[in-house]
Length: 108
Image (cartoon, rainbow, N blue to C red):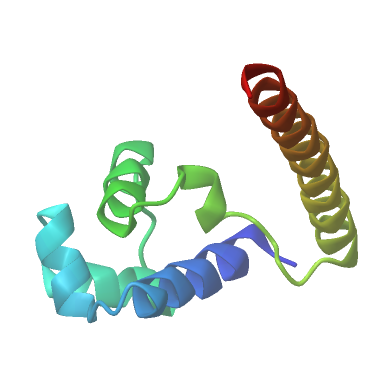
C-alpha cells in the first residue's frame, strides 16, 4: 500500500479512536482545521515536526501513523510479537507467584 494512503487511513483512524473531530485535532496541534482536512484528503504534506505534533495530540508513537495494519506480514509479525510478550509475562508472573508462596510458607 502507498505510504500516503497508509498515513491518511491511520490519521483518520487514530483521530476517531481518540474521539476527536478534525477541529479538535487541529486545536491540539496548534493548526487550522482546514490543514487537518487537507491532510486527511491527501492534499497536504506535513513536516516531520508536524507529524510529531499529530502523534503527541493523539498520544501515540509517530510510527503508528505509518504502520500498515492491512499488511499480512505486518499482522503476522505483530501477532508473533504479542505472543512473545504474553509468554514472557506469563513466565514472569508464574515465577513471581511461586516466589511469593514460597516466602509465605517460609514465614509461617
